[in-house]
Structure formats: structure tokens, C-alpha cells
Image (cartoon, rainbow, N blue to C red; front, side, top):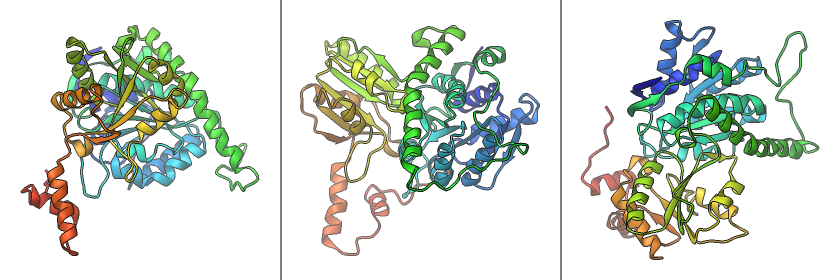
Length: 421
């Protein structure tokens, strides 16, 4: 059913159609509308046989989800930014225990300084926590990926994050195809847990594991992720068949490709920026440039073989990413380099959109023209204000008590403080 609605509401509807039995809710922008929407659906009876639990913190939200999942309930929660970091210990526990929790991460920058706008620093901080991470390009992707996420999680007994760009997607109103309940029920079977706490057959979970077995336990977590590389495309194919959409009309799988068959230059990215990248590629194609794109849907597990196949004809790779590792550079770029280690190509990292800064077609065009002319360095910060940075560094060289960097930058650009609300 086509409906004009906000992305958060669409995700709430998709999650409700998956019939969760426990929803753990704690508000943090920009994910709050999702759990608010689910709360309303529970209250008015649309979502039946579901316990909606308001908790006191993000750590509590994940802890309650762990308890619910271990007891055999289909469990869901959502968070963003500092909220994800606050639940970090429990995030690792959920994957270590092999519990199929589904969580929306409405991607948002991590402070300090405080910033409520979008980048990928929150989910990237948890990239090695053992969760599957699926990134949505659009709100339709977000709807589709949540329904697939429950099936993937429960088949493998692994937790899944569905990552969607905060505000850019969560608060965008657009036409979305919301699947009907009967189709979701046919696609997503009743939850049959692989492990279950049962008073009639008591067992312990989360036991202490010493050096004699810890390596094997951690390897098995890796093996589960490798199994997901096969399962994720299978689930996407089944979804495509059952929901009656063409290949270009449904998200899922490991990667997506755009005008890539003959491309000599390939752009790789995750999330909503792919839409702007595609528009920029179309314009450059009209000018005769052989350029294409690959969107990474499954960031964990990382789709090495799929990327190798997609990038086979490329001469250079440009990785546009909304996060970076301070002190070294690109995060996604390093994983791409690893995927291409047997067929080395120039891989250029571009850090863009930090803290919600707009990524425009004009900026991407300049960037990609530099790449096509081999003028792009190994690490580029898109639209970085170099004179502003140099003023801050010069001030630090000139005086010991130069003050906090963030406040100094705000003074330099003529902003007293960033206000919210």
C-alpha cells in the first residue's frame, strides 16, 4: 500500500508488521519518532500481544531486549549516537549471547562537541561488536530492510542493526510502499528461538569462558557472520519474489550497483548519500565519463567477494564515507582496500557530511572530476575550510592558553553558540 508518510512512521509500521513481542523504548533524537509510533500502535491495539516497556536509559533498553530475547520473545529497540555508546557493553553481550534482537540506529554524530545531525560515527563505533549492520539508502530501503532483518536475525541467532540516516531519512516525508500484514506473515515465520531460557529445563547463559575456549567462541561468532554473507542475498531474493517488486524496486542483499558495468571510476558509499552520488554520476555520464557507483548495504559482514566482482573493471575507487578513524583516515576505505588486496587499485578516501554538513552535487562534481583527472589525494575532507583550520592551528602555536577548539571555531565563524530548539 502506497502512503505518503514520514520515514520514522514507515519504519514503525514495518516493525509492527513483524509482530514484535517486546519493544524497549528510550528517547534520543533522531530515533524517537519510531518508538513513539510503535507506542501508539500498541496503545490503540493495532499491534497486539506486545509489551511496550519505557526504560530509564539506553543501557536499560538493550538489557531488557537481551532478557526478552533470551526468554523467547521477538525483541526490538532503537537508538542513536551517544545512546548507542551508552549501551555498548550490552550491545556486545547481545551478540556474544547470539540473541536475534533487531535495532534501528538512526545515525547521528557523536560528541563532543554536541551535534544532533547525521553522520555514521555511531554505528561505525560498533562495527566490530558482532552485530550484522545493514545500511538503508532510502526510506523504502529502511522499511524493506527491517522486515528482512528479523528473518536474518532469527535464522542465524544474531542481532541486526538497521542503520538509517538521522533526519535525512527519519524525518523525510515521501511516498513509501508499506507491505500488508498477510504478506509479511507469509515472509516472516513465527519466531522459533535457537536458544531459550525455560524454567522446566534450567541452564546458565553468559558463563565465564577462559583461555581454553575463548578463541573458539570468538571464531564461531566470525563464522556466523560468514554464514550471513550467503543468507542475506537469499532473504533479499525471497523478499523480492514475495512482495512482487523488480530488482530495482527492493532493497536488501549485500551491495547495490549503479551504472557500473563499464565504469573505469567507481564511487563507493553507504546510506542516503548514494542518491546524490547517482544524480552526479548521471550528469558526468552525459559528458562522456565512464563512472559508476556501488552502495554497500551489508557493512557487517563485509561483502568482500561481491565487491571484488563489482569492481573488476575499475581503474580507480573513490570511497565517500560519513565517518573516519582519527589519526589514520578512512574506515570503509580500509575495508575496501582489504577486499582488493589481490588486485590492488588506487583507493581514495573522501570524508564528507560530518555532523550533518550538506553533501551537494556541486561539491561531488568537483571532487569526482579531480578523481577522473588523477588530482585527488589518498585522503580528502570534502568542503573543508582550510583557512579556518589554519587560523585555529596558528592560534595554538601562538599561545599556550588558546582555549577549547570547538568554541574557538564558533567565534571565528561568528557564531556565539549552536542552539537547539
